[in-house]
Structures are given as structure tokens and as C-alpha cells.
Length: 220
Image 1: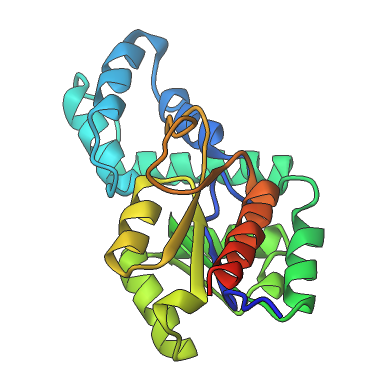
Image 2: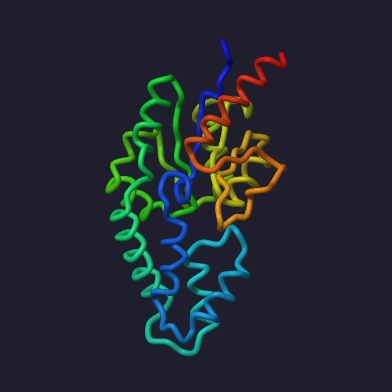
């Protein structure tokens, strides 16, 4: 019998929901088109671990004086993103995939960089909470969340896999020596990487995981 990684940790955006474009466009939707080139420059230079509040603060600082502070723009941004994601829904087939994984004995967690309160709203609106043992947002960091999951499950590093599409997912997994499977897309440019296993979507990521588990068993 193949020994499986009993705990699967999923990222949210770009993995279970097609929301990367939604979140990026929302920064532009907040401001007049005349300042969009400035926003493009700010976004292109942001560190991978920044929150949306950090990004908005940097945008507001870079723009000419505006009415309203960062808190107001953050509230508007949150509303735009929430409504758009709920309207779009999860990627077709995700509910069935998660149910199949749980039925097969896997323990599932969600580890997202989305602020915890906003993430909780989305998870409930999309009826995803029932699919996971727990849901983690920001703060703290994805690394701390992974460490928390390991402690809760009393798990060794070879019992987990992280599936995500962001640098923070990859860096956090590497720091803990956890298997990482990346979802390649237009935002991360991972399509041709050979540094870690990649897949085109969450479904092929699970297929890739099973291939890796089968290979590891054969190499014993």
C-alpha cells in the first residue's frame, strides 16, 4: 500500500478560486484611470509577503493627494473583491475533489494570505468551511500557520504537502522541508520551472501528488 501524505494544505486564491485577476484588478478599480501607470509600477515592485493593506498604503503614498485614507480604500477594496469572488464561485469540480480527498482519509487545511476576517466571510459564502479541518488567514504568516498545523496534527514534515501558487507558499514549505506543489499561472511565471513540482491546476496537482507518493514507495 502506498504511504500517502495524510495532510494536504491548500492555498486559496488561484488554487480553489480563480481570483488572482480579481484581486489585481481591484487595485485599479479603486482609482481613476489617469493614475493606473503609477499603480502598475507600485504593484510590480511589492515584496511577496505584503498584505493588501501594505500595497494600498504604498499606492496611496505614491499617488497625488486623494480624498480618504488607506482604511477607507481598504474597505472598498475588500467589498469589490468579496462580491466578485462570491459571484464567480469556486473553480468547477473543487467541492467534489475536496470531498473525495476527505473520504479517502486525507486531512485538509486552508492556508491563505487573505486577512482572516475577510477569508472567513468568503469561506462561509462559498460553503467551503465544511471541507476543511480548519482555515488559516493573515495574520500571522503562512509559515507560522504551517507550523501550527504541524503542531495540531503532531505531524512530521513528510506527512504534509502544500499546494499553492505564490512565493510565500513555496518559501514557507521549503523552510519546513515540506513537499510543495506549485500551480503555474500567468502571475507567477512558473510554467517552465524545474525547481519544484508544478501543475496547471488543483486537479492535476493532486494527480502529481499521487505520482510522487507512488514514486517514493517504489524507491523504498
